[in-house]
Image (cartoon, rainbow over all chains, first blue to last red; front, side):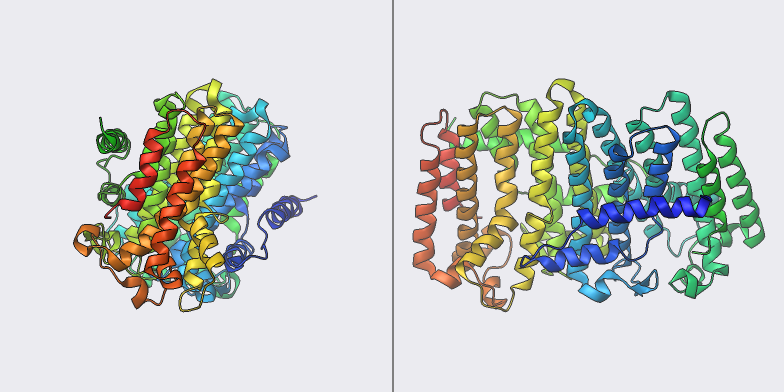
Length: 295
Length: 295
């Protein structure tokens, strides 16, 4: 299997698990579950859970043990997109080429579907904690790591900074901190929670932490470049929104050429962070994929 | 100490714990924490965490072990109120006599503060799970019980049913199911999570479950009566909104007199559910308090 086949194989495992876990019961409140499922199956890349599974394989860990946490991160990511798209936030009508959740189900249902996805992520992780006494503490620590990354000291803090920095000049350091929280925290958590569950040693954990930090940064630089140079049809959303909204990005701050240089060196550093570890092929390719992706 | 002094003593313990735990750090995103704190300290009754502590004392349990879970339920309750008040939901300007969260901080911040409170509730519980290896599994089970009560099979399902049943005729059974999910689930969870952590036996747990179910119902009947007969100044919000919004309530379905009878018999049944248990004074008084409260 080449890299893309392997990525798709991981992705399929994730899709299957999510499809089995997030069902639509025949209850008066079934629309809630339809709304949750709509966004959860709206064609996400599944980068975060794929990273979790890849780290698990790299460390020779138990995929079944890691899977609930990998998918919990994807649920959290999905809830954050639904809430982000709401009229009171970014007011986006399209996401991944499809109408956003509130465009289909209305604002109130979208709000509640987001809440329910975050809540379900916790339920899934707690179930996993309780499933096997032996691994309970390790898994509880992984759940805590993920929830910290998602919360007021992580992703949500990043969203607040992003929101409050609109229309104002932002320094390079501020931009890095914002993205490290808003996008980076959950990417790092998907890697480190898997490492924790698989019992990675201190040195491996540190290397993976550095790798996660760097691919998180690379991911964001690429996002900013795609908003300028990307193909709206492939992206499934309109481009140029950063400029229209006067948002500070790596491109507006550095210019396109410098941003591309930074992307290249960041990916190189991410690969370097893995030096000395075994079975790093997939993670190395993922760093490159992040920089080359078209969407 | 009489009942009200004891209630206030529990309440003060909760206030102190929350004040120490939910602080406002000097960070660019400090407004998020201010928004979280604003609603968390806006004068709630603290009924749910008080119930947790009372059950803990009744069972001779460890208050420190129960406290994080008691307060997590209060955080979840608070987030649900913030989201409920948003323009896309009930669009309320006042709550407990103060402007609602989005009136003070704007819709986007209120949305994120709600998200962050739910997230923080999980973080607090997971910290408690990891704090003491001996009790970890019991606490993880309590956390799962609380999150299930809060989620798509509990409180959020109730909100969806409530939302979708506006402007339509609702049967008595549908009304009971809706409230059992929307308000009841979290009240039951505050009681049962404490019982679980304190190692209550099967018989005690069943009695408490029945008690919790009944006071949850009583709480809602009283809420509906207060909307008709309550004092807006004492309640801190306008009355008559159920009639204005054509909402089915116990009062619109049964009439005031029958609703009062049902409230009385429900409280009596709740008290009866505790027969045979020890140290039930506080819980008996609480059932009466729920029926007599002015707000």
